[in-house]
Amino acid sequence: MLFKDWIDDMKNELGKIKRNKNNIQKLYDGMYENLGNLHAPGLGLFRKQFIQKFGKEFESHFGKRGSKLLDMKASEFNSIADSLFLKMKGQQEPGNLKECSPWMSEFKPEFLRHELEIPGQYDGKGKPLPEYHAKIAGFDERIKVMQSIRKPKRIIIRGSDEREYPFLVKGGEDLRQDQRIEQLFDVMNSVLSQDAACSQRGLQLKTYQVIPMTTRLGLIEWIENTCTLREFLLKNMSEQEKSDYNSSRGPRADYSEWLSKMGDRNAGLANYASAYKKASRNETVTSFQQRENLVPGDLLRRAFVKMSTTPEAFLSLRSHFASSHALMCISHWILGIGDRHLSNFMVNMETGGVVGIDFGHAFGSATQFLPVPELIPFRLTRQFVNLMLPLKETSLINSVMVHSLKAYRLYPDLLINTMDIFVKEPSLDWKNFELKQLKKGGTWTKEINVDEVNWYPLQKVNFARRKLAGANPAAITSDELRLGHEKSPAYRFYVSVARGSKEHNIRAREAEDGLSEEVQVKCLIDQATDPNILGRVYEGWDPWM
Image (cartoon, rainbow, N blue to C red; front, side, top):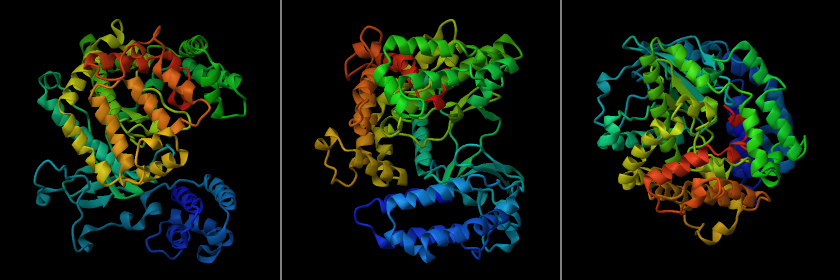
């Protein structure tokens, strides 16, 4: 992952018209110190084996101290870096803490001049009292490597209060965005607690600690007794259903087949643009409903029935799940959080509550920058709707969304002012997104002064302001599409699908802005459940689940 991030940073530098040789040198030295220097202090067995395998290759490809990089063509660098990265992919993961970090494995607090606190004990709500904070007594030798792209590791810190504190160590991402979003959720919780209708219903977002340590590394509090929504659903399939789901007759295989008919079997992501251009509404909806029917429609219901000992327990779990999910959907929409695939939801196995994780795509970046733009405001697929039968989404889900949106719209300044941190100190990802948006260009450049220092974060915060003022969700999606896909041949088709048709969609019949909370929620649910959008979503999102 460190090497992949270095490749991305170096590609940015080599792609500039005027190359900064000092920056290139600095980037190479930093990478070599971490991944090529066998004499660096504190190396574990895992890192040593990596350096022995690849350290010399770095020098032969990039020259001593990266001397060849200074005049290397970007295309040549790309082919060398990509081939090296492919070789690295087969590396075996570390099995214990000592292989990663001998210092942590042998940690003894008595040998340190100062005590180290367990991270995440400052909440900003009152004066901190460090004398009462738990200190680090040691680390558990067991580590668990997660299977997601970044391969984060779960470690357990032992506290001086004789408790264990599990954390996820995540590299390769600037976790300041996740941390700030959790802080925004805290502000949203204080807004909800001041609203009579919301506090009566006990509406609160579940938050967790995020501790960024550098712009590329941080810790995330591990939430016990939870599992991902993907595991939660798949666990409730019979062996036969699982086998059918993953077979060549399953929904994913069926979708791939349908996409390749729209374009070309070897066209990859380009087939999605073809699906927007060529497939009619009728064709898309019919094929999507056929895919939905390949999956049992009651997996969530089964899961909660299994967890319940009485009918009352089932109703209580279902109610907690639906209200926590509905609240999370509205809160996520206001902050433009996207990429809500099944592994980005955690379900509490005791209460049935839902927690959102991984906010790499926020403030509309999933619509604007993903190669297959996301036109869905939040996840409200068939499994969620069927859980609430017979009333479906018109029941608890709708009322929680309306009440929470009313509360947020009463205090727009509080939320917008808290977002000011994104303007004052944009994260690394925002800087990269800003460059990406400038590169893509479009008619939006006539409306904004791109020489202004903070034009990009101000633009993003303005979208949140419009949502809190009653904007039509489809109008917001269309404007985000314009910023990132205006020059794409499929752009007008993306917008047409996002806007919907007056014949089939409430959102197409409503005004661009000035909507009441009730109408805004109707438009959001209409967009989130529209089979014409769900039938063209990126396959990793599993829209049929």
